[in-house]
Amino acid sequence: MNQNDLLNLRHATLDEARNDMYERLSSRDANYSLDAPLYNDPHMFRIDMEEVFQKEWLFVGMSSEVPKRGDYFTVEIGQNPVLVIRDADGSVNAFHNTCRHRGSRLCTEKHGKVANLVCPYHQWTYDLKGNLLFAGMEMGNGFDKQKHGLKRAHCKTAGGFVFVCLANEAPKGDFDDFLQTLEEYMEPYDVENTKLAIESNMYERANWKLVLENNRECYHCAANHPELLNTLLEWDDTNDPRAPKDFLDHYQAQADKWDAESIPHAHKSFGPGLRNRIVRMPLKKGTQAMTIDGEAACKKLLGRVNNPELGSMRILHLPNSWNHMQSDHFIVFRVLPISAQETMVTTKWFVHKDAVEGVDYDPERLRKVWDATNEQDRVLGEQNQLGINSIAYQPGPYSETYEFGVMNFIEWYSDTMLKNLKK
Ligand code: FES
Ligand SMILES: [Fe+2]
Image (cartoon, rainbow, N blue to C red; front, side):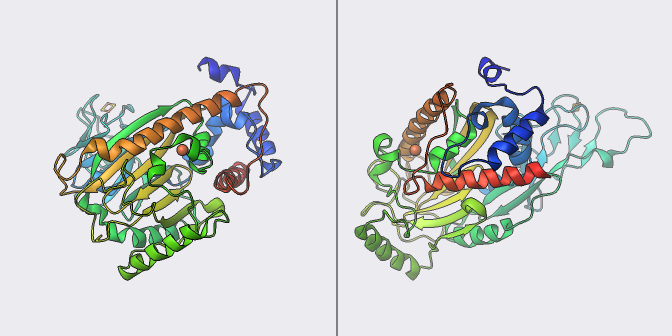
C-alpha cells in the first residue's frame, strides 16, 4: 500500500467499508459530488472492483484488433489479466489470462498472434478455444486434461465492439438491446475492414470515477481544450436547453444528408443514468474530423461512407468507455482502474484497413488533437484528486445545466453499487 492509500484508509475491515459505502450512497444528495472516501479510500476502491469491474459488462477493444485466427490482445481489469482471442471459427472469445497449472500469466504482450497458447513457465499448451492440449510433463494417471481448460470470461461483440464480463453470471437487463443498436449504428463503418493505427496508454493519478466525471461534461472545455474546440460542438443532444438556433439549424441540415444515405444519428439510450448511449452530432460547420485544422485525417473513408461530414457518432458505455466515430477514422477510449488513485486511459485510433501510413494518413496528425486533449484532461483529473484528498474537501454542487452528464454517471454508479452491495 502506498502512502496515499495509507492516509485514506478509514476502516479496519472490508465489511465496515461496505456498510459505510452503502450508507453514504443511499443518503447522498444527487446534486452534489460524492464523499471523499468514494474517491480515495482503498477499501472502497476494492469494492468498486468487486461490484462494478468484476460484475458488469466492460468495453475492452475492437474485433478488428484480432482480424485473423490466433490474433489476441490482453487487458488488465484490476488484478485480473484477460485475454481476447479469435479462434479458428472466426469467433472472438475471452479467457482469464492465467494458466491452469500454477497460475502464471499466459500471454505477456499487449497484442500478439499464436497457433496455440503456450504458457511461458512450463509450456502447458492450450488451443484457441482454451482447451488444454498438452500438460507438458507427466501428470499421472488421474489427470484429466478436460478439467484444466482456460477459464472463460463472458464475451459479446456488436458493431466491432468487444465487451467482457468477469461475473459468474453476466448481468441481465437491456444490454442486448444496446448491442443490437450498436450493430445497426456501426454498420456504415464496416469495422472488420478497419485496422488499429495508433494506441496510447496514459497513466493518470486519479480515481477512475474522476476520469469519467471529467469526460461527462464540457463545462471545462472552453478553458482547457483549444485543440478539441477547433471542431467539437459542445451540445450532444438537440434537447440541450443551451443549444442555440444556429446549432439546431446546422444539425438539421446535416441530419437530412445523413438520412439520405441511411447514416443513423438519432439519440438512443439504455439503462439508468444513460448507461449506454449513442448519438451522432455534427462537428463545427465546414469541418470533417477531429484534427487541428478540421480536415479529414485519412484519405480513405471508412466502410460505405461517402460523406466526409458525418460529424462524430458518440458512444457511451458506462463504466469505462466513450467513443468518437467519424467519416475517416474512429477513436475508442477505455478506462481501467489500477488503484484508488491510479487509472489507465487507453486511446485507440482506427482507419480503413487498406489506408497506407504516410500516404493516406499521417499518424502524428491523426493523434494530435486527442493526445493534447487527453493530456489536458489528465492534469485536470489529477488536480481534482489532490483537492479531494484535502481535509477541507466537502462535496460540491453540480450545475444541472452544464453537468447533467456527470449527474447521470453518478446516478448510474450509485444505483449499480446499491443494487450490487445489497446482494
Ligand atoms: S504455470 Fe503454466 S505451465 Fe506451469
Ligand atoms: Fe476534457
